[in-house]
Amino acid sequence: MKKAVITGVTGQDGSYLAELLLSEGYQVHGIVRRSSTENFERIGHLTDRITLHQADLLDQSSLTTVLEEVRPQEVYNLAAQSFVPTSWKQPVLTTEFTATGVTRLLEAVRQVDPKGIRVYQASSSEMFGKVQEVPQREQTPFYPRSPYGVAKVYGHWITVNYRESYGMYCVSGILFNHESERRGKEFVTRKVTDGVAKIKLGLARELRLGNLDSKRDWGFAGDYVRAMWLMLQQEAPDDYVIATGETHSVRELVQNAFDCVGLDWKKYVVEDPAMIRPAEVDLLIGDPSKAMKVLGWKPQVTFPELVRRMVFADLQRYQRTVPVETRKAA
Ligand code: NDP
Ligand code: GDR
Image (cartoon, rainbow, N blue to C red):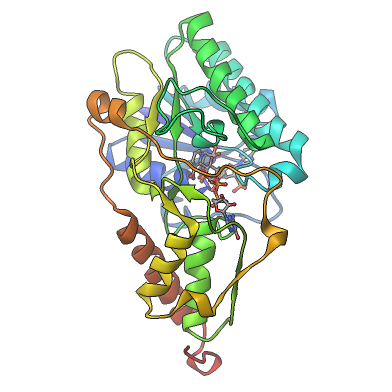
């Protein structure tokens, strides 16, 4: 039985990846950081089938200890401070988790079993930032626009460097935005679908957003974790862009989401200048042709399907948890 370790298992992608690996017959081990209350909302349904280990990307020896204990064949490094606006407020912490944390994990792998463990690094389209080419592909130069993006560029190159320096099987997956009903509520897709559900049920009157003009290539997280896994099943390690090849503005996202419940978004959305970022990534659109050709990967869920699925998941959640008498349907 193959064994895999996932850092960031409590996050959106960690939960989908754990499900996928279990379905592929893996023994799955997840790394969680210590906190005073458990944060297993996304993996509650899996805790009897996966093994959790306390460790932290900030603590080198804790990572080495987990790898010594488990002796996995595959390690997926999904842990990061992943919210872009926070990276301006906590730039040093973001660097420690998202950049230097990658080196700590790679060093742990190098010490424990450099030839036997394959490593996936969760790189990001935020590395393209102020895009130097449209669409963005593996060779497109990076121009990050946030401390988060800068940290991810470091994570990408240190991964490539360990591959080239030590002959380790390390890959960097350059994933464009991917979403789901498990997405954190601060990210724009989930903020919008959660807001639409609340407005529809009379639990909120407005939705405050930042830049409606920025454009993203949004896919479904469940499709993207399959690409991560495929990257570690190849004969030779390589880096891949994972995207849908389509781009949509935040405005289109908002319109699609309000359309799902038959409401006019213009009556509810307030543009709030306080939410504009110090430096924006205006346009992202990826070219996934290498992944399609080499990995045989293809996204399954379209943009309208994704938005619909998220809106209805949020509606159902509020319908389940909020008493009818507190709701005043819009
Ligand atoms: P989430 O923010 O949902 O999850 C991040 C995870 O990292 C959480 O499990 C969190 O744990 C964990 N974590 C944070 N800091 C530490 C630490 N110091 N030690 C151990 N664990 C830590 O992210 P996603 O699932 O959306 O993304 C997964 C990865 O992919 C991230 O690296 C992200 O930057 C990257 N990425 C994401 C994209 C997307 O669109 N979703 C696109 C491209 C890249 P806790 O629960 O304790 O907070
Ligand atoms: P992003 O995702 O920064 O692309 O990073 P996010 O959903 O936060 O923003 C996308 C775009 O929407 C605009 N926007 C808003 N964003 C948020 N969060 N809240 C708002 O109210 C709002 N209004 C407009 C933003 O300005 C931006 O242009 C995500 C994260 O998952 C990263 O970890 C990952 O690496 C990248 O995707 C690929």
